[in-house]
Image (cartoon, rainbow, N blue to C red; front, side, top):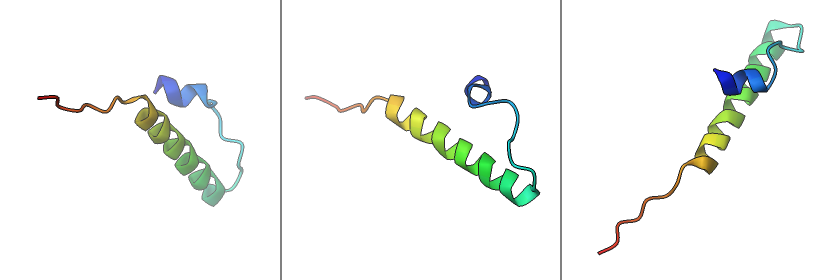
Length: 45
């Protein structure tokens, strides 16, 4: 939730369809940031 608030607490779009699209974009950004920050674990031996 903290990361979502870093993207802004309010929606800038006025219509509900655009608000939905804006939230989907924010969720995709958060998922990408999480993917970039997760280390790849490789078993050695």
